[in-house]
Image 1: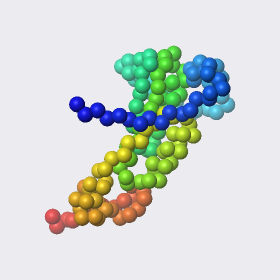
Image 2: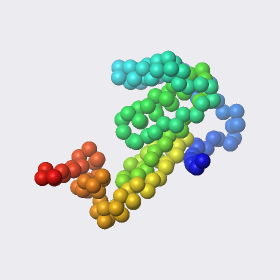
Image 3: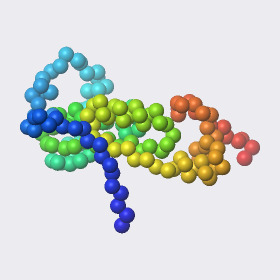
Image 4: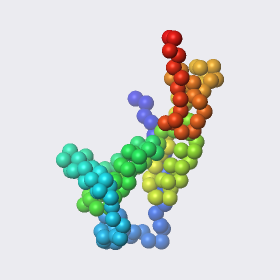
Length: 165
């Protein structure tokens, strides 16, 4: 069986204080802050907590790999799990994972900077899908055979379809 090993980047723990508190042990995290959460944040966090409890998704000492694309859904889930980690009575680790298809170097750099600045354990998996697709299409930049317009924003990228086919 072919086994893949992930290179996980873990935030460095301070060496001077080996008895550092885990997030759930830190009493300052349980105090009310002056920032009020929006109804949407409250609703989303509550629904995630209900799903975790109802389906027993997280147990003590679990490691949770969160696939992160940089979009609203995955980033929200990552933040809510970090918050739940601070208030749940069980201990679990969160590892963020970004699959780099070679399309957008700016997104990879931005996510890596975000993971480091917020002390997330993370891994970035590189694939050769984009390179193999360029070779197959004769060097043209295409996604599944449709030419790209060269814009950086994926949602505004136009794919022209040949109506005659």
